[in-house]
Length: 234
Ligand code: OAD
Image (cartoon, rainbow, N blue to C red):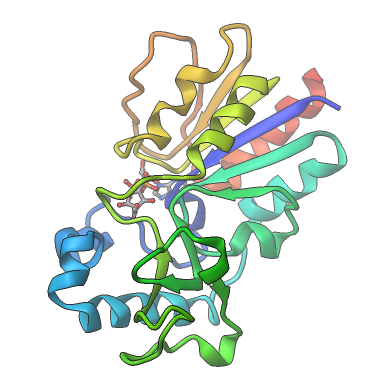
Protein backbone atom coordinates (compact mmCIF):
# COMPACT_ATOMS: atom_id res chain seq x y z
CA UNK A 1 0.00 0.00 0.00
CA UNK A 2 1.22 3.51 -0.79
CA UNK A 3 1.88 5.77 2.17
CA UNK A 4 -0.54 8.72 2.25
CA UNK A 5 0.32 11.47 4.75
CA UNK A 6 -2.27 14.17 5.43
CA UNK A 7 -1.52 17.38 7.37
CA UNK A 8 -4.66 19.05 8.68
CA UNK A 9 -5.48 22.34 10.38
CA UNK A 10 -8.48 24.15 11.79
CA UNK A 11 -10.25 24.37 8.40
CA UNK A 12 -10.64 20.57 8.49
CA UNK A 13 -13.10 20.88 11.37
CA UNK A 14 -14.79 24.14 10.26
CA UNK A 15 -17.72 22.30 8.64
CA UNK A 16 -18.23 20.46 11.93
CA UNK A 17 -18.89 23.86 13.55
CA UNK A 18 -15.52 24.40 15.25
CA UNK A 19 -14.04 27.89 14.78
CA UNK A 20 -10.78 28.37 12.94
CA UNK A 21 -8.15 30.70 14.45
CA UNK A 22 -7.20 33.31 11.84
CA UNK A 23 -10.29 33.65 9.63
CA UNK A 24 -12.48 36.69 10.35
CA UNK A 25 -14.44 35.94 13.53
CA UNK A 26 -11.85 33.27 14.37
CA UNK A 27 -10.83 32.31 17.90
CA UNK A 28 -7.77 34.59 18.06
CA UNK A 29 -9.98 37.59 17.26
CA UNK A 30 -12.23 36.79 20.22
CA UNK A 31 -9.63 35.59 22.74
CA UNK A 32 -6.16 37.16 22.91
CA UNK A 33 -3.75 34.39 22.00
CA UNK A 34 -1.17 35.56 24.54
CA UNK A 35 -3.74 35.15 27.33
CA UNK A 36 -5.05 31.69 26.48
CA UNK A 37 -2.29 29.96 24.49
CA UNK A 38 1.04 30.82 26.11
CA UNK A 39 2.77 29.63 29.31
CA UNK A 40 2.90 33.29 30.42
CA UNK A 41 -0.87 33.66 30.02
CA UNK A 42 -1.39 30.49 32.05
CA UNK A 43 0.95 31.69 34.81
CA UNK A 44 -0.85 35.06 34.95
CA UNK A 45 -4.41 33.68 35.04
CA UNK A 46 -4.68 29.89 35.20
CA UNK A 47 -8.44 29.94 35.80
CA UNK A 48 -9.11 31.92 32.61
CA UNK A 49 -7.02 29.44 30.61
CA UNK A 50 -8.53 26.34 32.22
CA UNK A 51 -12.04 27.71 31.58
CA UNK A 52 -11.18 28.53 27.94
CA UNK A 53 -10.18 24.90 27.31
CA UNK A 54 -13.13 23.58 29.37
CA UNK A 55 -15.40 25.38 26.91
CA UNK A 56 -13.50 24.02 23.89
CA UNK A 57 -13.51 20.51 25.41
CA UNK A 58 -17.25 20.53 26.10
CA UNK A 59 -17.84 21.61 22.49
CA UNK A 60 -16.63 18.10 21.53
CA UNK A 61 -19.81 16.67 23.01
CA UNK A 62 -21.92 18.52 20.41
CA UNK A 63 -19.85 18.28 17.22
CA UNK A 64 -19.38 15.40 14.80
CA UNK A 65 -16.88 14.40 12.12
CA UNK A 66 -17.85 15.99 8.79
CA UNK A 67 -17.83 14.44 5.33
CA UNK A 68 -14.19 15.45 4.90
CA UNK A 69 -13.07 13.55 8.02
CA UNK A 70 -15.12 10.52 6.88
CA UNK A 71 -13.60 10.54 3.39
CA UNK A 72 -10.10 10.62 4.89
CA UNK A 73 -10.99 7.64 7.07
CA UNK A 74 -12.39 5.80 4.02
CA UNK A 75 -8.99 6.09 2.31
CA UNK A 76 -7.61 3.56 4.81
CA UNK A 77 -9.12 0.86 2.55
CA UNK A 78 -6.73 1.88 -0.22
CA UNK A 79 -3.69 3.50 1.40
CA UNK A 80 -1.52 3.37 4.50
CA UNK A 81 -2.88 6.64 5.92
CA UNK A 82 -1.22 8.79 8.59
CA UNK A 83 -2.98 11.98 9.68
CA UNK A 84 -0.78 14.67 11.18
CA UNK A 85 -3.11 17.22 12.71
CA UNK A 86 -2.63 20.61 14.33
CA UNK A 87 -6.16 20.25 15.68
CA UNK A 88 -6.81 19.48 19.32
CA UNK A 89 -10.26 17.99 18.68
CA UNK A 90 -10.81 14.23 18.31
CA UNK A 91 -12.77 14.23 15.05
CA UNK A 92 -10.23 12.27 12.96
CA UNK A 93 -10.26 9.45 15.52
CA UNK A 94 -14.05 9.53 15.73
CA UNK A 95 -14.27 9.32 11.92
CA UNK A 96 -12.25 6.09 12.16
CA UNK A 97 -8.63 6.99 11.36
CA UNK A 98 -6.26 4.69 13.20
CA UNK A 99 -3.01 6.65 12.90
CA UNK A 100 -3.41 10.24 14.09
CA UNK A 101 -0.50 12.36 15.32
CA UNK A 102 -1.55 15.46 17.29
CA UNK A 103 1.15 18.11 16.97
CA UNK A 104 -0.53 20.64 19.28
CA UNK A 105 -1.96 18.32 21.93
CA UNK A 106 -5.43 16.97 22.64
CA UNK A 107 -8.42 18.55 24.38
CA UNK A 108 -9.47 15.21 25.84
CA UNK A 109 -6.25 15.01 27.87
CA UNK A 110 -4.84 16.88 30.86
CA UNK A 111 -1.42 16.81 32.43
CA UNK A 112 0.88 18.15 35.14
CA UNK A 113 1.64 21.87 35.15
CA UNK A 114 5.23 21.08 36.18
CA UNK A 115 6.06 18.30 33.70
CA UNK A 116 3.47 18.51 30.90
CA UNK A 117 5.21 16.05 28.59
CA UNK A 118 5.93 13.37 31.19
CA UNK A 119 3.78 10.41 30.00
CA UNK A 120 3.23 9.39 33.63
CA UNK A 121 1.10 12.51 34.13
CA UNK A 122 -0.86 12.61 30.87
CA UNK A 123 -4.42 11.53 31.59
CA UNK A 124 -7.39 11.00 29.25
CA UNK A 125 -10.60 12.47 30.61
CA UNK A 126 -13.95 10.76 30.33
CA UNK A 127 -16.78 13.08 29.20
CA UNK A 128 -18.06 13.48 32.78
CA UNK A 129 -14.62 14.92 33.71
CA UNK A 130 -14.52 17.51 30.91
CA UNK A 131 -14.91 20.44 33.35
CA UNK A 132 -11.49 20.78 34.99
CA UNK A 133 -11.47 22.91 38.14
CA UNK A 134 -8.87 24.96 39.94
CA UNK A 135 -7.57 22.65 42.67
CA UNK A 136 -7.78 19.47 40.54
CA UNK A 137 -4.23 18.17 40.72
CA UNK A 138 -1.89 15.80 38.89
CA UNK A 139 -0.16 13.00 40.87
CA UNK A 140 2.80 15.37 41.44
CA UNK A 141 0.52 17.78 43.27
CA UNK A 142 0.52 20.48 40.57
CA UNK A 143 -2.64 21.93 39.03
CA UNK A 144 -4.00 19.81 36.15
CA UNK A 145 -3.49 21.78 32.94
CA UNK A 146 -4.79 21.16 29.43
CA UNK A 147 -2.56 18.84 27.35
CA UNK A 148 -2.13 21.55 24.73
CA UNK A 149 1.09 22.81 23.15
CA UNK A 150 1.14 26.56 23.75
CA UNK A 151 3.16 29.12 21.81
CA UNK A 152 6.77 29.05 22.97
CA UNK A 153 6.57 25.42 24.14
CA UNK A 154 8.35 22.47 22.53
CA UNK A 155 6.44 20.34 20.00
CA UNK A 156 7.52 16.80 20.96
CA UNK A 157 5.49 15.06 18.23
CA UNK A 158 7.26 16.91 15.42
CA UNK A 159 10.06 14.28 15.20
CA UNK A 160 7.57 11.51 14.50
CA UNK A 161 5.70 13.75 12.04
CA UNK A 162 8.92 14.50 10.13
CA UNK A 163 9.65 10.76 9.78
CA UNK A 164 6.24 10.26 8.19
CA UNK A 165 6.66 13.28 5.87
CA UNK A 166 10.02 11.89 4.71
CA UNK A 167 8.47 8.51 3.88
CA UNK A 168 5.30 9.79 2.18
CA UNK A 169 4.34 8.57 -1.31
CA UNK A 170 1.56 11.20 -1.46
CA UNK A 171 1.29 14.30 0.77
CA UNK A 172 -1.92 16.27 1.36
CA UNK A 173 -2.48 19.57 3.22
CA UNK A 174 -6.02 20.53 4.29
CA UNK A 175 -7.40 23.65 6.01
CA UNK A 176 -4.30 25.26 7.46
CA UNK A 177 -3.01 28.79 6.88
CA UNK A 178 0.55 27.41 7.28
CA UNK A 179 1.39 30.25 9.68
CA UNK A 180 2.59 28.17 12.61
CA UNK A 181 5.94 26.39 12.74
CA UNK A 182 7.23 23.73 12.97
CA UNK A 183 4.03 22.25 11.42
CA UNK A 184 4.21 24.57 8.41
CA UNK A 185 7.73 23.36 7.65
CA UNK A 186 6.77 19.67 7.27
CA UNK A 187 6.38 20.09 3.51
CA UNK A 188 10.16 20.68 3.32
CA UNK A 189 10.75 17.06 4.38
CA UNK A 190 8.57 15.57 1.66
CA UNK A 191 10.76 14.14 -1.15
CA UNK A 192 10.70 16.18 -4.39
CA UNK A 193 9.21 13.36 -6.46
CA UNK A 194 6.15 13.05 -4.21
CA UNK A 195 2.86 14.60 -5.42
CA UNK A 196 1.49 17.26 -3.05
CA UNK A 197 -2.18 18.34 -2.89
CA UNK A 198 -3.62 21.28 -0.94
CA UNK A 199 -7.31 21.73 -0.13
CA UNK A 200 -8.45 25.16 1.11
CA UNK A 201 -11.24 27.51 -0.03
CA UNK A 202 -8.85 30.48 0.25
CA UNK A 203 -5.42 31.11 -1.19
CA UNK A 204 -2.67 29.83 1.10
CA UNK A 205 0.90 31.11 0.87
CA UNK A 206 3.22 28.13 0.56
CA UNK A 207 6.85 28.84 1.42
CA UNK A 208 8.21 26.42 -1.13
CA UNK A 209 8.92 26.51 -4.86
CA UNK A 210 7.70 22.96 -5.45
CA UNK A 211 4.61 22.19 -7.51
CA UNK A 212 1.46 21.84 -5.42
CA UNK A 213 -1.87 20.71 -6.87
CA UNK A 214 -4.35 23.17 -5.31
CA UNK A 215 -8.02 22.23 -4.85
CA UNK A 216 -9.81 25.51 -3.98
CA UNK A 217 -12.69 23.95 -2.03
CA UNK A 218 -13.86 23.38 1.52
CA UNK A 219 -12.61 20.18 3.14
CA UNK A 220 -15.66 18.01 2.32
CA UNK A 221 -15.94 18.87 -1.39
CA UNK A 222 -12.18 19.02 -1.74
CA UNK A 223 -11.83 15.53 -0.28
CA UNK A 224 -14.47 14.19 -2.70
CA UNK A 225 -12.42 15.56 -5.59
CA UNK A 226 -9.14 14.32 -4.13
CA UNK A 227 -10.47 10.80 -3.46
CA UNK A 228 -11.46 10.53 -7.14
CA UNK A 229 -8.02 11.73 -8.24
CA UNK A 230 -6.19 9.35 -5.89
CA UNK A 231 -8.26 6.28 -6.76
CA UNK A 232 -7.91 6.92 -10.49
CA UNK A 233 -4.15 7.55 -10.41
CA UNK A 234 -2.96 4.96 -7.90
P1 OAD B 1 -5.91 28.95 10.80
O1 OAD B 1 -7.15 29.52 11.43
O2 OAD B 1 -4.67 29.76 10.82
O3 OAD B 1 -6.21 28.60 9.27
C1 OAD B 1 -7.39 27.93 8.91
C2 OAD B 1 -7.34 27.62 7.42
O4 OAD B 1 -8.51 26.86 7.11
C3 OAD B 1 -7.38 28.86 6.51
O5 OAD B 1 -6.43 28.73 5.47
C4 OAD B 1 -8.82 28.85 5.95
O6 OAD B 1 -8.91 29.39 4.63
C5 OAD B 1 -9.11 27.36 5.93
N1 OAD B 1 -10.53 27.00 5.96
C6 OAD B 1 -11.60 27.69 6.48
N2 OAD B 1 -12.73 26.99 6.32
C7 OAD B 1 -12.39 25.82 5.69
C8 OAD B 1 -13.11 24.66 5.27
N3 OAD B 1 -14.44 24.55 5.44
N4 OAD B 1 -12.42 23.67 4.66
C9 OAD B 1 -11.08 23.75 4.47
N5 OAD B 1 -10.35 24.82 4.86
C10 OAD B 1 -10.99 25.83 5.46
O7 OAD B 1 -5.69 27.52 11.49
P2 OAD B 1 -4.38 26.59 11.53
O8 OAD B 1 -3.55 26.78 10.31
O9 OAD B 1 -4.85 25.22 11.85
O10 OAD B 1 -2.21 26.31 17.55
O11 OAD B 1 -3.63 27.16 12.77
C11 OAD B 1 -2.47 26.54 13.20
C12 OAD B 1 -2.32 26.65 14.71
O12 OAD B 1 -2.45 28.02 15.09
C13 OAD B 1 -3.40 25.96 15.50
O13 OAD B 1 -3.13 24.58 15.69
C14 OAD B 1 -3.39 26.68 16.80
C15 OAD B 1 -3.30 28.09 16.26
O14 OAD B 1 -2.75 29.04 17.08
C16 OAD B 1 -2.20 26.34 18.88
O15 OAD B 1 -3.18 26.62 19.55
C17 OAD B 1 -0.88 26.01 19.48
